[in-house]
Image (spheres, rainbow, N blue to C red):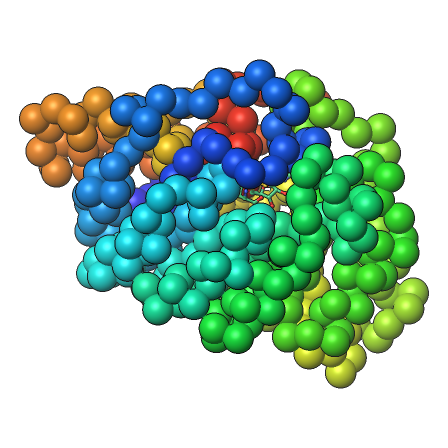
Length: 324
Ligand code: SAM
Ligand code: SF4
């Protein structure tokens, strides 16, 4: 079992399968000048599966594929299939921008994908294309519909609380959770890169206050809540929730490690610590050698981030490289 030095049990691995993306969200990627990792440095599916097998023997049960945009990685459905066959892995999920979901939803479900998080920061095409710089909202909506038809459940919609977001837009997303069997999650913005800053922070509390003013709320829980505080509006088909890494940090219950697409294991998104598994995977290191490095990554997990105290770390791994 993987237990860190603060007694937290680590049973969840987030794997970034690519640092490439088909969008350029203003808060995540600069418009141009991005230098991608060369193909030769990306972990192969066999290498990823080996890491997951070793980690599952150490107690990891849940895997999330992310990116960059995970659906851009060629053969990602085969990866889902291979990981879902690993003993001890009970839950495989993905975070995607949904642009390619229409094409992949059914195959992902058949391959063993259990859950989906789809990032969607606006329900209005004009604002959606401003935020993503190039996204077509219609494609994401079609992708969500296809994922529902394919039977993937639960489906969560991740909404980042961005500067300039209107109360109207928050209300529109709340209505999505009323009218559909979808689970909307409002995420507080984290200052994790140097090229995008916000002036007006919208907190999780602001969202709950807006919702309470208009609707009767009940506490709710669905599988895979993670750090979200979740509510159900009376008679709603879905739920809504807030994730508040800034205003009410949940590091004390963090249960995850992260693997970058080029094979670095990171104990925390907000720490410079990283272990190069790629070099070990491509050497004569045994599974036991890898397990020791993985255990040391868990042991070195920092107690908490200090973003709320104004300590921002603009590290060599951005959100689009290590995955949100
Ligand atoms: N491309 C996929 C997508 O957009 O869902 C997966 C990768 S993306 C980096 C994962 C999530 O990170 C998205 O939901 C995005 O909104 C979130 N994210 C990116 N930058 C963030 C930030 N500064 N603060 C909070 N969440 C952020
Ligand atoms: Fe791409 Fe996701 Fe980053 Fe947007 S948030 S640029 S979709 S990786």
